Image (cartoon, rainbow, N blue to C red; front, side):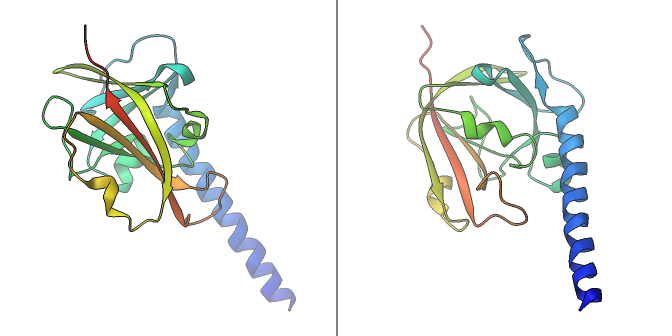
Length: 171
């Protein structure tokens, strides 16, 4: 019985250590700043959330390597200016932890070498991991952010937190 208890404690400690390690790597990628973001390394863009004073790199793809360093552009979507639906994914334990504080009406800004696009949060919803409606093409320029939910969950989360924002008209 003691051996089982010890094994469970060690397993729990290893999960905490793994989350802490991933958090630190992503913490370096996310900057709390009042400065406009600058493109660096192999990032294809920067996502900033002015209200939360956050800026994070956007990478092409959603591999574990990319998600440890910032947010990933889902391969089923396009960058702003190249299509009407931009989908970005990020880990809730790292770069997207602050999303729990986002509200309808907040602005999200994406900067790429092609330009800068501003979006306004229209709604926030919680869906199951297999909900494909978040991937549907849009009629108007839309930015969708996806992360796991609940934010305080340890291990694989049972839901997804989805933030949908419409492009702010210039002018």
